[in-house]
Length: 467
Ligand code: AMP
Ligand code: ZN
Image 1 (cartoon, rainbow, N blue to C red):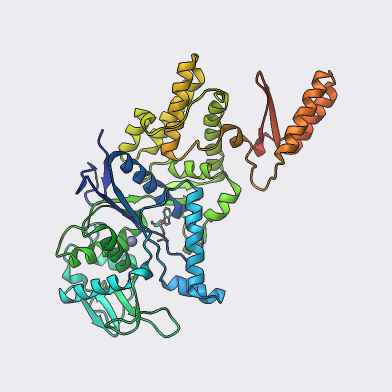
Image 2: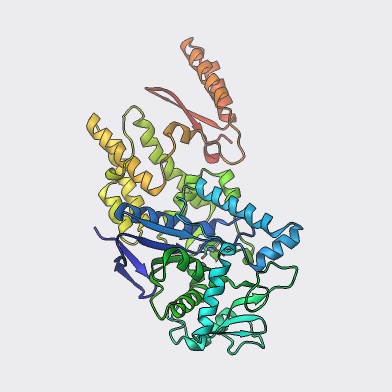
């Protein structure tokens, strides 16, 4: 089976043919660490993290770089507003981001380059671009000369005029053309800065990614990915810089872009003020519910976030975990080799997670219907292996149902004690007492179910709680 990916460069789904099958290279634009990321920001890291897992199944060596942008005017403003040093802001939010990604089941990339650790490479790239006539110095700035690169705009398919209008580019007196963009800019003494041939200054955003991709992955990389809001100007500018700095060699062979996560139909973004912070959502919901929902739509489609969608995600996972709980006595574990072919085929087909989820639901149905010990073991192995690849079904099934809902604290030992008391009451035929305990548990937000294997309990969803 071949991995097929939608390439923004050609606007087609293509077979993935790596430059060197012995070393696959992938770069994903990481966050600017000036506050907590929102759930929309998590989408590229979840879906392209899944892609890195799929690549690792196929190829012996994958080098996946996901950077941290730790020099930016938004960071400077955040530090000033909080009255703290800049590195307190960047190190604190970079750490929170890494922790939140781990909680969400996102594998760590192989390299996490920080922009501030690549200033010499950034300056060297600026010098090369100036020497080759693609950039120029003006009033302490270094600017990329867009007119020196006729292919500018090919990725996003826009004309220069459209790009200028769409990006509201800064018209500055020192620019030759309005579309020229900053590679380096001067810093006043109160701002972070590094000595350079153009005086003390700091890099622009776009050049950071070009320099870090080159430093860790080489001149031509296999896959470059990010949200489709970065297509212009960020990725267009990365292509211009890297291609021109590398004597016209192709920068990235496959460009992948995820669609936007929306909230009530509008793009979730800090500037629109409609963000839901991942760090907070992780306190209120099981991480797998968030992860499932982020993969529920195909990555190139928009994805609307809502309470209803969250509830549906929880219900689906409850169903899958319910099957695993029924098979609790069956010995089985996840393995790479046991990922069911239909799940793998869906993911190889341009990361078709909706199809992969449909396949998992069919596996869950088959597991529910399995009658023989062999069939049960095979079904449970398939379900767990599919889950492991997707980053789901990682919790012990019993524990899954005992996770408290938002803001509810459940004392598991107290629940177990009441269930024992109820069993004793039932044995003594004291049904009034048994019913009273059931109601007491309901009031605590716990639903119980009597099964041939004994009494089971789970945290009740709000709509299951008595009025
Ligand atoms: P930023 O820190 O704004 O550069 O965003 C980090 C990553 O999140 C980039 O890959 C963006 O394209 C992506 N992103 C930002 N907003 C959204 C959104 N609402 N939905 C999906 N991805 C987003
Ligand atoms: Zn980038």
